[in-house]
Structures are given as C-alpha cells and as structure tokens.
Amino acid sequence: MKSTNASGASVKADADRLADFVLFTQRSCILNLSAQLNKGNVSFPQFFLLTYLSSEESLTMSDIAKKMGHSTAAATGLVDRLEKLGYVERVHAAEDRRKILVRITHKGVQLVSKMRAEIASDLADILANLDEDEAETVEHTKRAIRSRSIG
Image 1 (cartoon, rainbow, N blue to C red):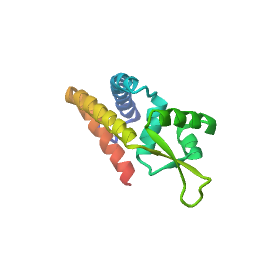
Image 2 (image 1 turned 45 degrees about the vertical axis):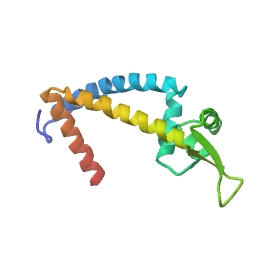
Image 3 (image 1 turned 180 degrees about the horizontal axis):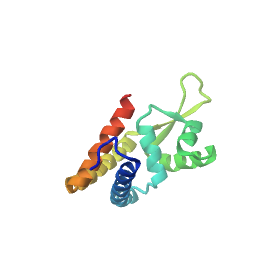
Image 4 (image 1 turned 45 degrees about the horizontal axis):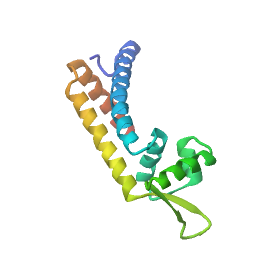
C-alpha cells in the first residue's frame, strides 16, 4: 500500500479498494440481516429505528422523524408497527404528560443485540479472509478514522 501522505492517485486507489470492501461487506451483512429480520417481521427502516432507540433512553416522534429522514406521520407508522410487535413502547414524559416518548423494550434490545452479534460475526469472517493488501487498506482506514474522531 502507498504511504498515507502520498499523491491523490494513491488516495484514490485506497478509496477505490475501500469502496469495494464496503460494498462486499455490506452485501454480505445485509443478506444475513435481511434473513434474520424477516423472521421477526421487521423491515430495515424499523430495524434502523430500533438501533437508534437502543442508544437513547427515549425519543420523541419529531426526533425519530429527523433521525430517520421521514415525516412525523411516517415515523408514527414505523413506531405503530414496532409497538404492535412488542419492540417499542410509548410513554408519557414525566415533565409533560402530553408529550409522548418512544423507548425500546427488552424484546427490542434483544433483537438489536442479536443482529449486532450476527453482523460482527460476518465481519470477523470477512476480515479473517482478507489478502495482505486488503488488510492493509482496512488498517489504514481504521487509523484515519480514529485520528479524525480523536482530533
């Protein structure tokens, strides 16, 4: 692999290899994720909402709409379906009972945890089978991401 401060062509080549890696791993993970989610009758947008909720105590409908890039009405539809499946619940805010919050249930947390473990397992299998150049590109990318998130 070329040095990290090499020419734009080198960066472009690294970016192209990384794009191929991302597309391959995404396809692999999405296929497995899709099969698992279908068992629980959960769509990708519903699952993405569950992952947001798993990292928050609760969210309002407008927060959900913003995070999902949907209208409030569409967010309400997602929440309705997830609530019927037992993955989320609506609760009244303590400071204002008129305000409705959505939070993930234990069943929802279990689904997100299971899917995260499946994705991690898929990624571990993929990473274990990288050739030397691919592994170097992934390591270079991890270092670049870490340096930007710390700095």
